Image (tube, rainbow, N blue to C red; front, side, top):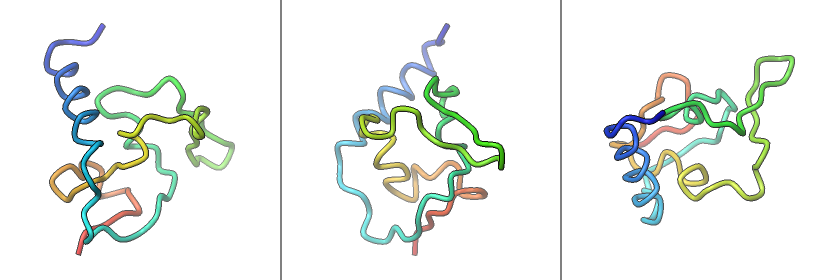
Length: 86
């Protein structure tokens, strides 16, 4: 069950995903899967035999997934993520 703070974080991420992505964002997804564990592990997260993550609902994934990380402030997985901000 989600606690109140987790639910609020998820709602905030969904709302801000409607805003534009920062022009300073560079890079590509390296399939680490860590963003798919924020604020809890997504039920559509899958892993292949090589340890790479994939989305089982990729063509219809929510905008919060499509846009992550939208800004440097929202970039919570920078140690493993292929995206960076200049």
